[in-house]
Image (cartoon, rainbow, N blue to C red):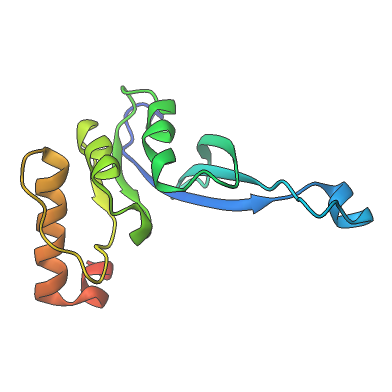
Length: 142
């Protein structure tokens, strides 16, 4: 018997990409093109889209992560949130830690420890120590 979706811990991967209209592609657009971005949270096992948000191209990726996490019901456990180094921000780490989830976000190359005043900062500092101790390549596979 399969586990119900509410009892399975999910691993969410954050992705984003740019979109433009078919009209622009087919007929050429005006000199001022308006790009749209889609930010999605994907379940790594089932490839099911768990959260999605459309924005204009001037909205960054990292500020959207807390809003995507809010779209997933709190009773559904998330085992981990995986994203790239652009998401190595206090706001992202705090949003992930507030849900009690693990963040798999590589620290930036020039990363320095943060003041451990929040659960997200403490978890990020531990990831920073591990990546410096084992190296970024081993830390990513770990």
